[in-house]
Length: 119
Image 1 (tube, rainbow, N blue to C red):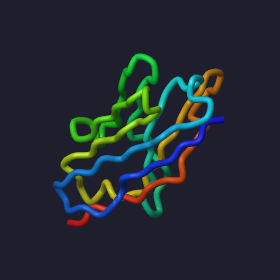
Image 2 (cartoon, one colour):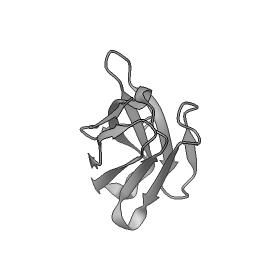
Image 3 (tube, helix red, strand yellow):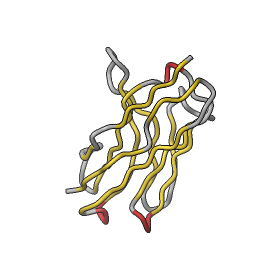
Image 4 (tube, rainbow, N blue to C red):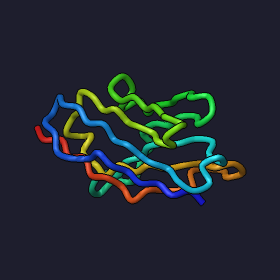
């Protein structure tokens, strides 16, 4: 099992920045990918970005590409999401997730952190 705890959400004006953190604990040696997802009110959860835990390869959704940056600190078992040029449509609950070895998808999830972008 992997436990995930997010932090760093809050209220920011459009055009501003926030950095989310996600600390992993437990069987972190088995992690293949760490990712960020978000869910806005009345909408389905959507993929934001992911990063390969060992080699650091990254992938972004088109909606955040060029504005958000995912990174990791393996020594701290922590993944970050730097969000710049925030827009009101980025308002959502952001979830951290982990995909472990032998899992077909992201199977471990954090509790979520609220990000609100005011216009």
